[in-house]
Every structure is written in structure tokens, then in C-alpha cells.
Image (cartoon, rainbow, N blue to C red; front, top):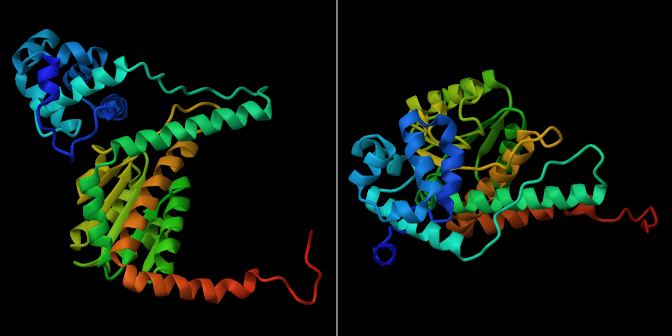
Length: 310
């Protein structure tokens, strides 16, 4: 049966099979009990579930067919048929003998060489998982909206604020009007000025940061196109987002707080967003970027009155 499922057409916009387990882990905290039971059954035995009808799977888990279909859609698939294709792909991926990703806690007495190795492994895992979960269709729509925007406002608090500032300065250098707001009061007062044709971007790993949600909601109500970059795509922030870009994180530990891991995934998403915008606006972006390089070049040139440093 699995072989037959593999031959079924899969919508290229659906998450790749390897992303299924990652999606379940990411969304598990926000799932209802019944949906969570279905999701855990799927990743617990992808090969077995791929061969089951929706009726049989619902009976096995002790829930309704509607809940199974709803679980498929929450995980990013158009329906149960697409989900079965992903299950078969996940089973084949697991059977290929690839080693599972490893996340290692950093101990207080770890040698610095081990710290480097563990952090590098965790960051690589976060990047790979975020890329696997990336909704390319949503990303494309976000790129299109920002490329033609009159103005781009970015909202973030704490570590997400730093990511927002990075995106804003990149956009400024290719000629877009972009602002990263760090004060939640100013963020709201600026959001009031947005309108159709503008873009507002909220960055929040939890998806429930009120200081980020409030200006996004205001921008949404004013008719601006809204984008959420979040680790919780079904959280409160998604209610006011036209486009949701999901990030993932590795496991939090005492010496590796969640903000460190979430930042890695967020930076990948904003880099993808920026490069996509630069591609679409290349004719005006290239001269703007060249001009910014020229304007700053003298600040990086050696001072002729001082000997160069070794």
C-alpha cells in the first residue's frame, strides 16, 4: 500500500515528508487533545498509518474522521490523501538509515571546543528544520507584498527586536522605506499610519507577545498586508497575519535559552525574505546597494595619517 501512496501526486506547496515530525513537535503545545493524539500516532508509526484509511485511523486513535482531516490541515496538508503521501515519505526517510538529529545540552564544565561543536550542531539543526518547514507559497506572497510596498514596518521585542532591526537595515540599503520599532507604544502609533499598500511584519517566537500583536492588529485593521514570523503558526499573532512564516527551535537548556535558538531560525527566514525582495526589485536594488557601499567606503579605509595595523 505504501508503494501505491508514493506514486500519488503531491502538491509541491505541501511540507516535505521529513518536515512532518518537525511540524508535530512545533505545533504540539497548541494542539487540542484529540488532534495531538492523532499527530502523535502519525509520527509514532508513519509506515503503518500511511496504509490506513481515514476511517480506520480515526477508529484506531479513538476519534472522528473530521478530527483526522483537521489534523492533516493543521500540519499543512490539503487533506488526508496528501498526509498519507507525506507519511509514506517519512517512513522511507527513516528507513534510509540516516542518523537522527542530535541536540546536546551544554554543561557548565564543558571544554570550549565542545561548546563550539554543540552550538554548531544545534544551529545547523535549527536551520535545517526551519528550511524544511518553510511554506514556499506563503514566503512568495510575502516577498511580493514587500517588494511593492510603500513602507515596511517591523515589530519585535527582546531578541526578536534585534532580528527586526537586521531586516529593516537590509531593506533600507536596497532602497525600501523600512523601520524596526523597539518601543511598543511607538509601534502602535506608527501602525495607525499604515494603509493598503504598506506591509507590517511581526516577529515573535511564542506567537503570543502582546507588544508585537497589538501593532500588527492595528496595521491589519488599517488595511496593510501583515506578515508573522513565528514559532507558533496557530498562536494569537496568526489571527492578524495575511501570511505566516514558521520558524523552529532546538531544545532549550540552562545555558542555551530559547531566544538563542529562535533567533537562528528567524534570521534564516528574514534572509530568505530579503533575498527574494532584492531579486524582485533588482533594477532599483542594485544601484541603491552600490550607493550605500560607496557612502560608507571611506569609513572602512585605512587612515593615511596612521600606519596600518598588523
